[in-house]
Image 1 (cartoon, one colour):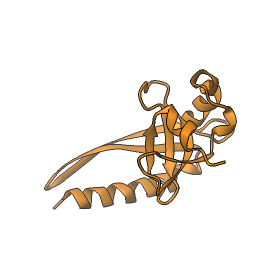
Image 2 (cartoon, rainbow, N blue to C red; image 1 turned 45 degrees about the vertical axis):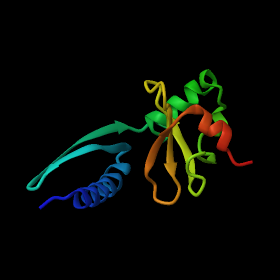
Image 3 (cartoon, one colour; image 1 turned 60 degrees about the vertical axis):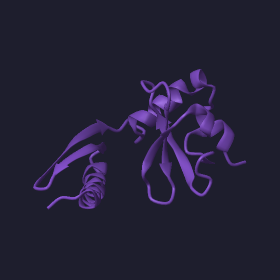
Image 4 (cartoon, rainbow, N blue to C red; image 1 turned 45 degrees about the horizontal axis):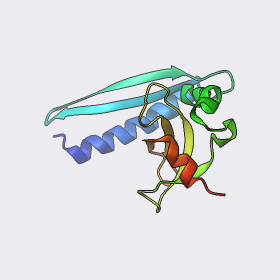
Length: 128
């Protein structure tokens, strides 16, 4: 029987497996939101090819569009803290140009989970 907790655990395990399997083929895999019933679970899986430099589409978008957002290319991979969550450190992972409100993609350092942030989060929370 699937519960919210078991669906989350299976999703995390599946994401780890996909990362392991496809990273060696130059493919990035991402599991979308999960829908579950007591006896069934479904999710959308999106696969992207990595660029020749081995980076994701979001990282390439950051390098290409950073100046438009008032950022520098060098800020990709930098650490910052969020104003709402000062206990966690996030690493800038890329840019989501179709997202107007939260275009910054960042990875939480403690567990690798990805989150979206407004541009100001990087500007205000970057560690010196």
